[in-house]
Image (cartoon, rainbow, N blue to C red; front, side, top):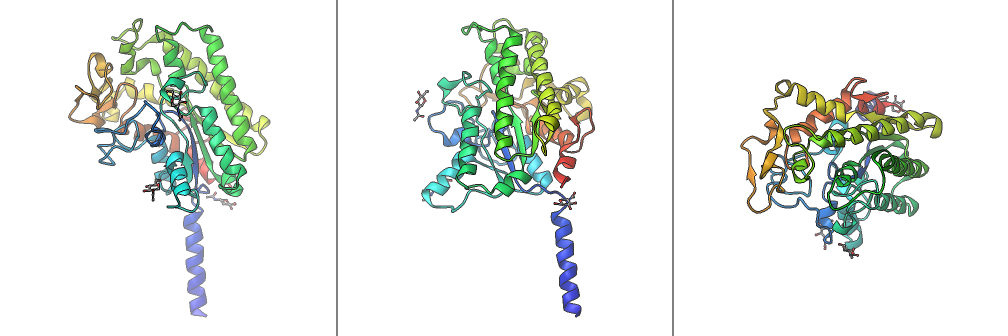
Length: 355
Ligand SMILES: *[C@@H]1O[C@H](CO)[C@@H](O)[C@H](O)[C@H]1NC(C)=O
Ligand SMILES: *[C@@H]1O[C@H](CO)[C@@H](O)[C@H](O)[C@H]1NC(C)=O
Ligand SMILES: *[C@@H]1O[C@H](CO)[C@@H](O)[C@H](O)[C@H]1NC(C)=O
């Protein structure tokens, strides 16, 4: 009798632990903000961060992540108490070569650095477009390689668009669309992606806004961009795109019965860091910690001739395009437990604990 009681007690405390969040897997789509090594496993791809000093502050080796440590997807996994998601191409290789039987049960990361929401963004670099990322996921679901119940309970993270907008300002690529039409074309692609992942079973969908892309050190590569302040024209496009993303989220309850969408206001979160850097322990919110030239923005970190700052996590930017792990950690905390001005209508913690 006593034994039975003990077992029941153990069982109930276990289920208490487990039910603190109802999400055990994350599926991730996007660009270098999320890429955890897909490009590294894609030998035909020229957008890489699989060399030192990438990864040096946390993994102590390059993993293919475009920062000095963990990404937002990694931090959210930690908050949920689950392992980091493997890049799809790594998992696929392991299943194909027989070193693992099934795809991981904690989700998969499909993100590919350099990709955009438009197919026309950087195909010559051999990146995996977001449309192709979707087809990779779709194939796994349709072949029952991922459990459909798991998909329903999983968290879906989507973040992409910086590369499309950055490329819009490249000098050798005169755009055929005006900024408004270009942003609309981008939003159409995001809308299609959400339609498709919903059809495949996604019910908890987080769309993250772009950060202030016009403030990245790599703007120094663009002939028309100012370096003493952010590139206003670029940020204007980013804000327009972000507004459209939020509308997609607002429409979700009607368009996608049973789904909950959230909009992560990363733009506003990062602008706050830039406005009051000391409060977030930043000493530099302008230059890349690792790189070279104007703003540290003219050379990729790790390439021949690069320089690195002594304390990466005092910088907002790690390299010419990407934030440091410290920035990602602060963003992640705001998305996980933040108030309405950071993420809405609910934060990720609430999204993860709804039945
Ligand atoms: C199979 O692929 C994985 C990558 O996911 C790799 O770590 C492992 O060494 C490979 N095994 C063989 C036998 O090739
Ligand atoms: C490799 O990338 C090039 C573009 O850089 C593309 O034309 C080619 O089809 C790719 N090959 C494979 C095997 O993916
Ligand atoms: C998780 O979902 C179950 C129903 O599936 C619900 O009873 C429970 O309250 C949820 N957990 C939390 C923490 O909300």
